[in-house]
Image 1: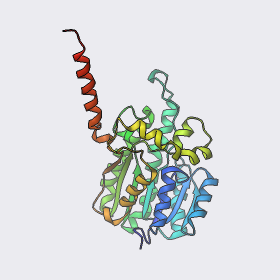
Image 2 (image 1 turned 180 degrees about the vertical axis):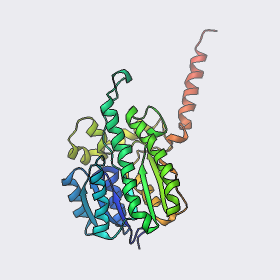
Image 3 (image 1 turned 30 degrees about the vertical axis):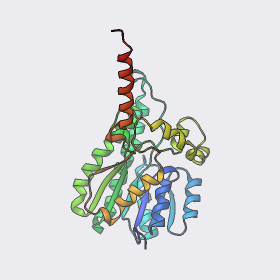
Image 4 (image 1 turned 45 degrees about the vertical axis):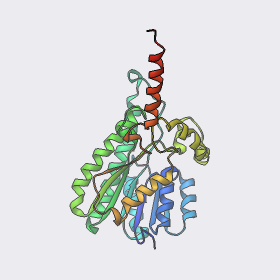
Length: 284
């Protein structure tokens, strides 16, 4: 018996990375899932691999008609909508100094990462309110909590997701709908390679090879000494989707290996050791 038996979910950005892994986990736990994304080939391939309880529908989260149609697929194919995972995102260009930043690129990032989630909530709520139940899960980021982890447009958009989550939670709670967010730390998915100009298909296939590099890079920042994985984020989304979290709403769940808690103690100890060594070397 699965944790999501009989539930129907829509997952945006489900053609790769965290979205694809969440779709796999949800189907394995008994849900019927509509996978949304812009890349038809990978989306249809994944839906076929997941079996009869999965459908793919092409959707650009910046286009309201696409989101309305995406949620309609859940109703038409599976009879309703119980869970929405607002996961769609896109890579961002290399950060520029603020005096050189491009407004159009900034606004497009907001449109995808905040506007797309707003549209998802809007159209999911239209289905969930009459049913009196629902769980909406928005993907935020460590960049919403800590400056310097991503470019300014992405960080601003993801910070907006936190307030969007809280605002929707207090409005939709009386209708039996919970709204929460998840803030992953750096997770080695294809988006990093895509940002570097690597072909999307190759980026998705090779993302896992970056785990050792991520683990090394994060050693000074997070207390859990390994790279985060899409599995970690999918597991958090699964909990928020189930009745096990039925009294949780308006919250953000950090899945960041401890980054938001603070630096590993060993890093501070080593810094103090080096400082003491430097003081000892000073002339008396």
